[in-house]
Length: 555
Image (cartoon, rainbow, N blue to C red; front, top):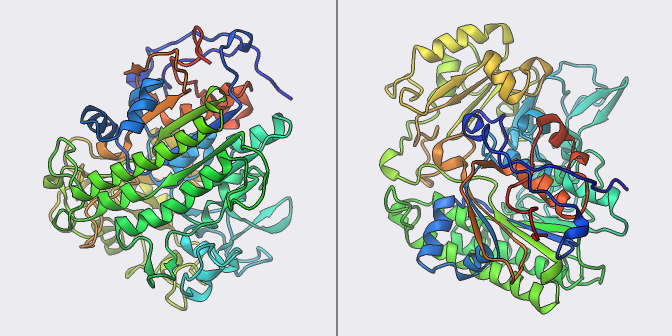
């Protein structure tokens, strides 16, 4: 068992493009040996409220509309300047919290991405071309096979073989499941390997795509709740995502799982197994309410994050659910031994709907028009024989583009990078065929700057070019949602982050130092008495602890 001796914390990490200049100055050397701790932390409960901006937290605490979240802030540290590490899709957002790493070391850029080293699911001998459009979303469960209806909450109970690519490892052609796809270990693996009789649990929005939380061992999570938000609710015949109130029903499954786990049972509530050492879940209700159009009651009413009716109701719902968890922790006498973290994988953009621009996917159209990609979406998983995404018959070695409020570009021909960048820079306006990246905050990232931030595209996983359009731009023409995430727009990355130890003797503290969500993972490991450098990404990226937690008599 590798326990902690002396480990120094700092208040921020240089290494994110956005925060490196602000973070470089801050140092916090208030670490104390665990022998001086007031309470020994034995359980860490991590809650991600997708879409929860720091401004949402500040507003609801100030207006007393989230009393349970406010009580957590009063018994811990409220970080008002927390950000994601460069990209804000759910995959890199959660990987930051669970690994301590950005996409550079974790290798997760989006739940739909590309890897030049992989072979198709239909190539079990790895004898064909390399370069596969990896899709680890709701279709990763067996229900999605051959484009089938997603009729089971558990995704059908196993993996969809058509979603699993192959890799040649030490001369053998092997399947690449999501847990094989992540390039670094997770807090769950570190805890399982270093704390005797420890138990881990997690619940998220995709039943099989989130298998990667197990880490490369495939065994990090003892109790991974296989729940699929894109499935059809048999009670209504509609999807859980069709409205924020219906999404509450899906989130309530996870709330009950957490309460059962606090009670020492498994996520089904049927077996007594002991309280997990590290466990947690994800809320989707707020995210769904944020994306809804203002006309339907969704989103925000102004640039000051005044919530519309749906967002206000969603925050009230999440706060009440968190209150139930806190009450159960106290009822079970676990207050002194539990650390609770409430944060988010990502925010949502744009909250100010006056900045919203939806001109369609002009980025992909421009690349296709200039023959950098085949026209009409004839690449990767967009060109399957059946027309269904992730049926295993997509084209190989085509490159791809993933767009939301960001553009991730994996080129078909990497030698064209400079020509592509020149084409993009010649079409920055919002007028066709422009990519709407001509205002402050927009940028085109490639070359050495991209390598330093996200890794080397030559190694196969990292995009060749990242386009961050003007704040407010979403590369879609959808009429059903007016906010998105995935990139580095201001509303995407500035998140709420509260760490509470339920210590009634400690006053709440507000910390304004710039921090990254990658600092959550080593903080969890440290709180449990382990060396944070057991996390591979912590060593690779020099990720530090969150400040104001390990000094004096705290912990």
